[in-house]
Length: 357
Image 1 (cartoon, one colour):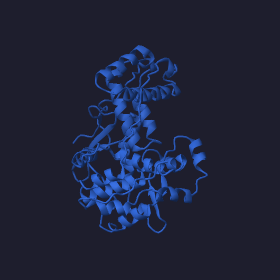
Image 2 (tube, helix red, strand yellow; image 1 turned 90 degrees about the vertical axis):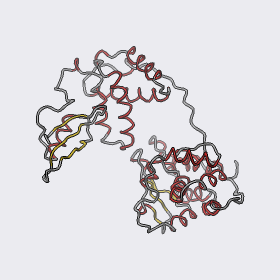
Image 3 (spheres, helix red, strand yellow; image 1 turned 90 degrees about the horizontal axis):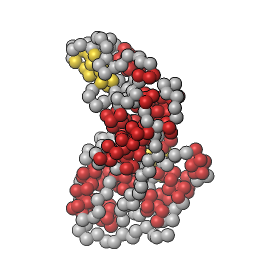
Image 4 (cartoon, one colour; image 1 turned 60 degrees about the vertical axis):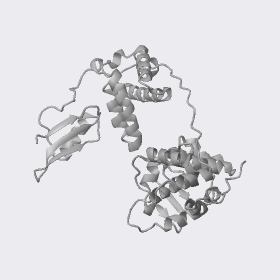
């Protein structure tokens, strides 16, 4: 196999292919959208690409640089301090920007181009909030280009205001709905849902949770933040959830809940069987927060347990909450063992919902 450095169709990242010491062909993603950085990574792997990289561009004067190059530099910059999940989301949005605006010269970009992009995305079926977030990535990419001296105009002069009537989803589970859902899931999926509901973890946080993150002695769970580094947190382990988890400790798997492929589809099908309104993984997280709020818990405590760290001020406000406050918040949740005990019963006894404020 000839050594090559290239981009796959539809990808902003560079890949390299080579033959290893055993004579086997190897294909490796450099994880970078920057040509120079990708070449350095390939050289570290001992790959000396033959000829010019496919999809690579020779250095060009700023007036010849297109918008298609700006997102690649932005993504490379994001990999320094953003989570893999965030970068993947940005990469998807950058793909649409490159697809529809990639040939426009950076110095020639005009509000009309951006208006045309928004109308095209909406015509393709994208939601207004999705398009708004596309433009957030575009604005950030242009700001980085300005900081690097590639353009001298402010992104505000090129990107019009785009309003989106975003309405946050309100779906969360009542206790009896959770019981009905669990009765229509396999045992290992029941544990996955219970962990999600009683920790308030994001999908990626639940899937990455390991047994080593569960401290039964101290009564804590280490939720490793996957959205941002600041989302990394330790939350009190619900006493009865801890008892349920102990029953499965030492079964061999490293992960507590594990990866759930097709989780949204499986949850939807289980909800259909249970004859309840469909839920998503984020609805399980929302259930955790809703139960706490219904029990009268402080919004600041709930925010800290959820790993909301959008600003330094939030961190300062949350700072006065001690571990006892957080423990009281978690222990106010409905009985985990009682819920689990009702799952196998055809006519479960009613379990009280959290008290209303």
